[in-house]
Length: 77
Image 1 (cartoon, rainbow, N blue to C red):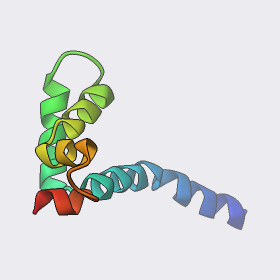
Image 2: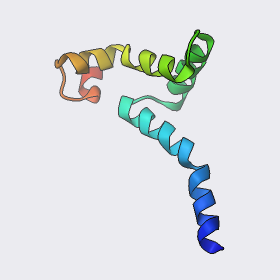
Image 3: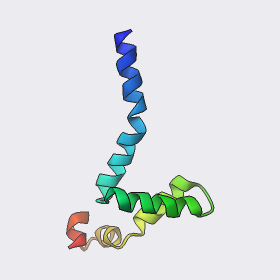
């Protein structure tokens, strides 16, 4: 019984944990992430794919992917 209660709590927090993982990986604030989600939601197609596409198109990520910076934080400087 007790293990089931803890499992339910863990499963209920899973989407939040995934969201935080993406936010921290791309170095975004909650407001930036929320605005990007709203923009992706208004686009046609799958919202998750649109969101990932918009995150990859950010300038700091482009600089990081091109190899001009070691990390995304350095690319923002």
